Length: 303
Figure (cartoon, rainbow, N blue to C red):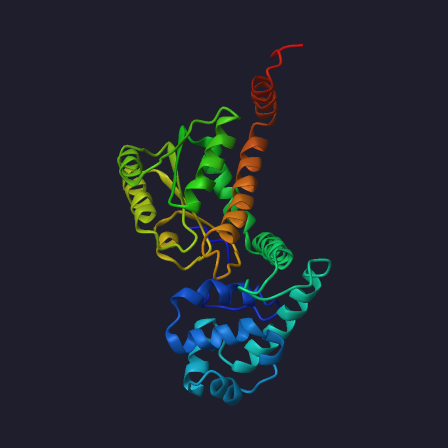
């Protein structure tokens, strides 16, 4: 199985490996005490990186044991190692955010529309940048090869995932790839059940816990198809059932859970997947794109 980020069981301390991104991804699955620790780190990583374990525990109204357990969950044997990587990663994010709108924080009721625009622009730019960092080209290459060789590609997602799935289907169809996107669960499941080893099934779920999408991939896998998951959580249930996992690094706000931040990151992954498939048959793809562009423009197909 190809995963698009480092597993939480081991950390290379020569490189922080996007520790803040990994903490954001782990947040939904953490127990309450560890979630408070994660939220404190994400709120002010620079300050928290200076705190000893006792101060962090007191700030989060929990025990030092919980802090140690949280560190081990991320793959650190010592709290000091986490603090060091937080310092490194905070410096990287500060450099990354140069030139972006200076307004920070979650969207609040008091924000002006200008603040809303700035915050959304900032979060989505960072979601794309973070996704580019965590997207493993080995996993991406495996997905490209599978789709390029597939007789048919079936795609399914719910909500925002469905929008992203439609985008992938339209892109693949424009380069003569047989791609189907299913509008409801029952259609997706019956389609998945009759796939075979020459087919690919793509499931899109930001949380990685969408039951309907997980079942779609399970049925496709049982039928022999290669399965690809696009998710924000590499250790989620959907990742466990997929052959290939492409991980995003979306940043959400309270007003936009699983909607815009996840979608923009997923669309970037879809663009990378499509471009790789198009490159695999470059001449044919360029000609097909020219023909489909001419059809939409109403121009003659031949000069």
